[in-house]
Amino acid sequence: MSYCVNCGVELDSSLKSCPLCHTPVIHPGELQKMDTPSPYPMEKGQVETVKRKDLAILLTVVLLAASVGCALLNLFVFTRTLWSLLIIGICIILFVLFIPVVIYTKQPIYLSLLLDGIAIGGYLFMITYLTSSPRWFWELAVPIVALATLLAEILTLCVRKLPVSIIATALYIFAETAVLCVGIELFIDRYFGKPLSLSWSAIVLTVCGIIVIALITLLSVRRLRDEVRRRLHF
Image 1 (cartoon, rainbow, N blue to C red):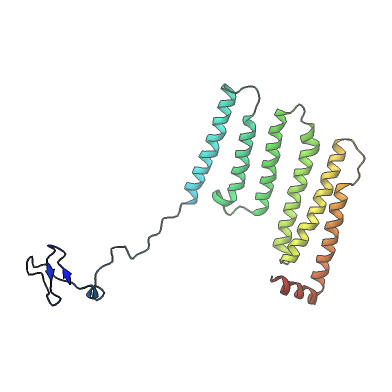
Image 2 (image 1 turned 90 degrees about the vertical axis):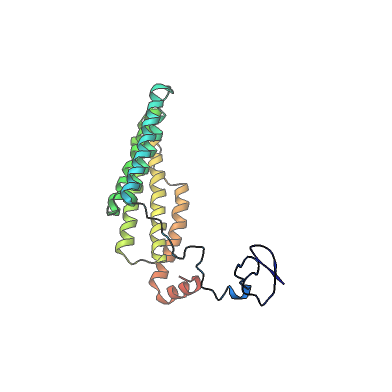
């Protein structure tokens, strides 16, 4: 038995409308046959993407506000040390890092890496105002940052100009890792006035050298290279 949805009177299965209030009777099986509109929107909406110009403005304002705010706090409230230089330096590095991503996407990769190295060097220079002597900056920090920036430029050049593969990229990375570690140890020995010699970097150099020789062998022998690629699925 069924009942009227309006007045609740009991209905016979053959009735098309309620005899009391004349409300149409719709059987559940007939609902699927009816072309009723869906209560939910059928079209998929899409949120408008944020424009790069607006995102660049927001990023610049946030970093500038953080720098100015910390500078004012350092100037008028917490005046014992120049701690705000650390925050300002970080903001400068973040701004430089986001330039090719948000602000100017057509900036050459080599210029971006150079600006990154300069920004890191500037940040380290700001730290010298919190130390007793800037000697560590000129004799240790600058050479290491310059070497790391140069190696990053060379790695980018190799990846863009030479044949690219996982094996070749690994070869470039391990070779530059060995050079970087050797350079860091020599710069440290020079800074402390010690004779230039290799100790911990010799271990890194040996390991990287073995890996580099193995990778060169893989790149030279085609059959061996193909076997390794099939087994490692790349």
